[in-house]
Length: 321
Image: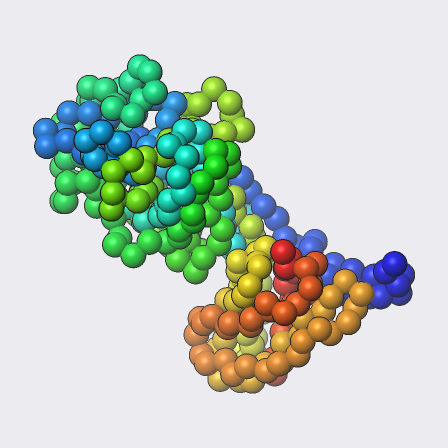
């Protein structure tokens, strides 16, 4: 049984962070599938599926595209703590494969093409569609057939069973969203890439046109507080705790921190009974950085991570699975 005084103590520590944390959930504004084809003739702009991986019979590649509109998604000055992307896998050959998300680097189209049947072969592309050759058919070509995207993935997960598949927060996914919030004109979404090393790895995910709204692509953005600035003749030396990821975590935890000067900070992990389960210190350098904390030995549960610097103390709540 939890001690009442300890619980009150923990909740009191957590309250400022919990009150400031919010979550927005965004539906995709467009999606499509690139079907490997030398003529760039096939697409799936209005179908109810997005495909990634390779076909069983002829080992042809399928790559999905999905994008979310971040315009006015967050209040001005909000700090993004973490993000999640959820797709629902609803058809495969029943084998486990890694699926990656890559930031797309040019705009692309979603036309009215809508294949019959399972959709794995696509259908004749319409004007406005993205295809293996076209970013927007008929006049705008990809620089590289198969799509223009960053080679380093922003996130990867292993998918076996049908159902929701969630890419939890990574530093790259967080950077993608923050970059797009700062410059919406560069927001072209993500390419969904399956295992392309062998045949029969294809997986189908529900698109934004799927009949069940709960299966459609979702982007969740967790944000806390708004940035505040004090006008004075002298700027105080400080730091900001901008995120904790992944959250929930199972083996290791990292903090995203930015500091305006070099300083040593003390970090405490406090459990729900108010006990400090671990305490350590880290040096911060000027600018944004990531601090690896470990945490693999902590029991499962809810924790408050408290970071105390020269002038300020900030905290974040995390869950250990």
